[in-house]
Length: 291
Image (cartoon, helix red, strand yellow):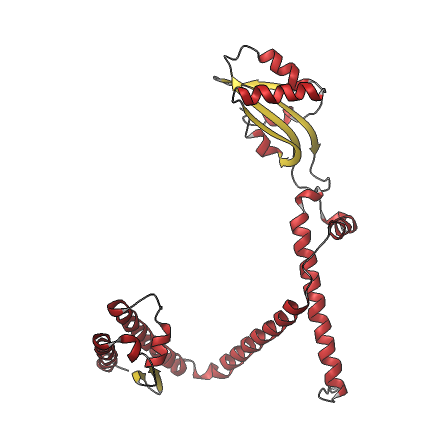
């Protein structure tokens, strides 16, 4: 198709849309009136109208419809050119299209039965049972720690008292420690109840290079300082590469695994049901072509 024909198609479509905009675009963009044609392909007003967002009106909707028609014309010109250039591959393209159509239909029917039958509730016992059964699948590739860090100004005069309280095993002393931190607005990061990557823990400290390896130990409160602050920190637990990943970090992952397993069970069960029913109706024949 040459440019003059293309220009006439586009001008025709634009004129029709502008005419409609002067009246009432929504009323025009209904019915089967042809607004553009490329070869045997036709574009109706209703098709254009269904593409216009409901939030647009007046001149905006007319402009959007004009753009839609223009793109449709160019797309159909490319389709026609492709059909001419690749006519020898037409059967292969048709096969790919049919395979894609079938895949879409299969996915839709699988999802239909999954939505109807799946139980999305997983108990803590379900999750722990899977975790214990598949222990070898969950191995750490990094160091995890539990611990806490407090940062306070170098000018604080009761640093030794704070250190003593933090080091004490007494619950009362630990409450006093927390109260002092809160009262003085010290920066306190407490990760003693959950695992954290060691690199994340170190990010709270003035540590550079390989220094972090020498700090990886439990049993006492350690201290560091920079030009403005003092840091007290304590590592209470350590998991190293090769240890099992703690369950608390895997709950959502295992939940997804269990969901996928249930989903696959539903799909396989439905496939078997379909197959048995088809065999009973004698709708399925598998020929032995080995001989």
